[in-house]
Length: 335
Image (cartoon, rainbow, N blue to C red; front, side, top):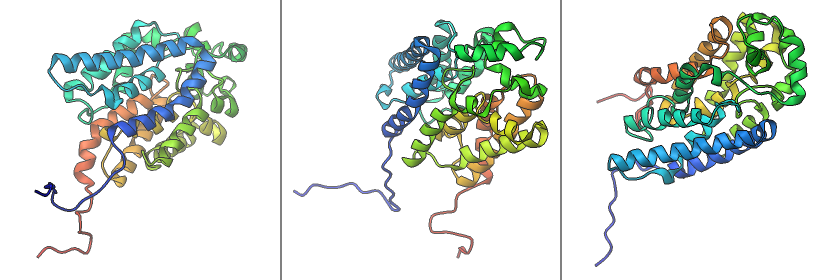
């Protein structure tokens, strides 16, 4: 008897990507930032990354075992969440902080809503927002490369009275300087681009993140629309309302989590709109929110919250920005 084949109804579409292959590409794209973070902040950065990854994988396995689900840790999505969570932590964070963050990211933000593909907010950013509320001092005490400490110490006096000594020497200082107009505390464009500044261990080197982002675009894992529209909007808003000129506005793109958020967080398949037009709306609105928080809010960084807020707006965007029906178009008429 001939072998029977089950064929679904047309139309048929073939995609070379699967969850596993996509996650492998994302891991490869994150390696440059991990190497730079380890070089700048030492083995402590690598330790925190390992703790994050192991904790995320462990929590996913424990939850799925407890709820009698099939284990999905081989798809590497938990590994990617662990890496992104680690990249959002300062190298000085206590070891228990990434463990708590991994629980929030995997169990509360991901598995409670059905697992990979079902979460409505980015798990790593949800964990970061929780950790900022739960451990504000640990999450805002940044270490900077030793050769940069002297430069920062010379200009941090009087930036903001409420900023602690640790914060003043840390990566928050350039963004606080941008908010307050203290351009003497801003790093040079080259320092910000290469990573000679304080900050979270995976955010500091814009060059490393850009290399990873371009790799994802080359592999067609992501498109350029969200990163370009997000960063472009953030730049224009900072230029228009910041009042610090083109160079400072351009440098601000390399500070905080702007580059990491644009290429690796906002482009998450599950939490951004389905259509290109919807993704552009998503990115522009997120860029506006990030700039407003940076320039006028009480917190110097707004990337995480801008993406999380727009994650919640994705169903609304998808409702009003619908793709064209297959075989249809503007000239298509119903009979």
